[in-house]
Figure 1 (cartoon, rainbow, N blue to C red):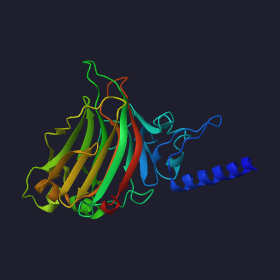
Figure 2 (cartoon, one colour):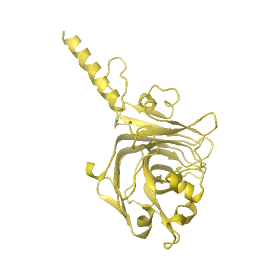
Figure 3 (tube, rainbow, N blue to C red):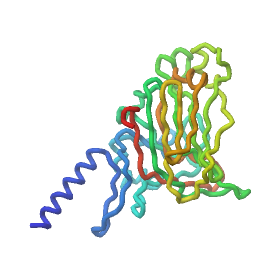
Figure 4 (cartoon, rainbow, N blue to C red):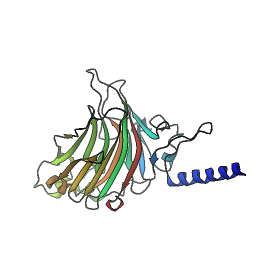
Length: 293
């Protein structure tokens, strides 16, 4: 009788996790495996595998829920049940439009399965992720290859796209967070002309890169750390391990309010060297409006 009750409760729990889109790991030989605390309902993933047109493949809900057994995904997004993480593995292969680098990276979808609904700085948004750098190769000079591990990416509305005659909805990323030489490095965009008209700043060419900022704390491979990104009207804050902060505000961030945005997190691998690769682990991932903090 006890065995029957245990079986029924296990089936019910499995059904609840699957319906929520939570990351799960199938047990082997009856052993309890540790799983990442991640709800994938509002994320799609891009991987280096090519589609029929040669571009990088994307997998959205509900197919992403079965990443652990999906033959297309399991090389690039898989469970490490020894520590309860999802591993994001990338190496030079197929890329998305407007880039030369490959990625195994999650893209936020406020409406599950759709890219059309996004958020603005005025609305506010936050993301918190617990992660680790698992592996990364070195170049011919002995320096580790860089990886972008989190982003806020801009997006044009359909009206804005038509206004400037652009073929797609792609806008620049206001934020890129790198793993670079053992440090967490932050890069953001600056407006070249603060007096430019709104229409003109919709063009990627209106924006340049800042000098970047490195958090002081070294991040060793295998060390778990947390990143929190909090945005509100005219303000962007990046928090490392709960207490180290980088705050961006002023004219550049204020003018960025014209764009829609979405979060990205994972492994956007910044090398095309033959044989190079990297692995990023994610243990926990939360995203929501500022009220959910």
